[in-house]
Amino acid sequence: MTPLEVYQTYLAFKNHFTKDNYDYFKYCGKTKASKTSFNNRKDRYFFERMSRKKSDDEIQRFFLANFSQCQDPARLWIGEIIDSGEEVYVDWLKKIQSLQYLFKTESEVFVDKKNFDKMFSVSGGSHSVILKKYLQGAISLETLVLLDMILGFSKNHDKNLFDPVWETVSFKMKKYKPFLNIDIKSYKTVLREIVCE
Image (tube, rainbow, N blue to C red; front, top):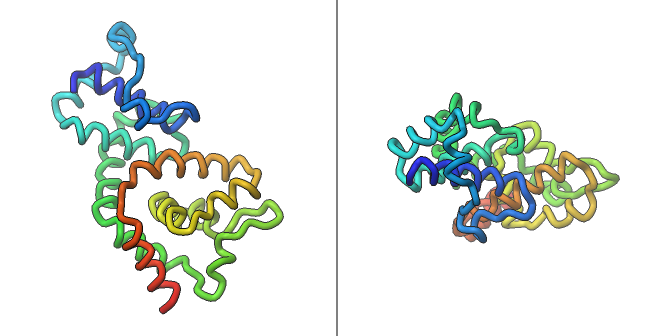
């Protein structure tokens, strides 16, 4: 990638994780950023350095890691990515490379076998147990998304939980889910073994 293309990729991920009407896959990661706007940026050296040091795939994974793992993608500033982006990327890579192990380990900790269904229920506008676990940092975004891919609990949450915290988490889950291109059957098996043992 050229430095301009790295910048455009950065903008594509930022748009994907912050705007409802932008889909990274639908638009193939393209944005209308011009060379002029790129050249006017004081931080363009960062994009130039990335274009020399990382492959195209690494650049995409780097931005995916940083936008998916931050608390609020809308407030993620390029300076923050420059300062701590590599560390976030390395941590995310470790999670993705051992995703099934992460899912199994986190699920074993939070699953309440006797009240499994209640963990995902929403009543009276209060947060479900699973959402609380995520907000406390007891489970990762990846585990939350995988559980939703298996159980589809977010539809019920979207319908019954009118809460800005949930809306933010739900949006992030929807935007991150397409990037987790995995065989969900093996994760279903892992969860079934944990719940039924």
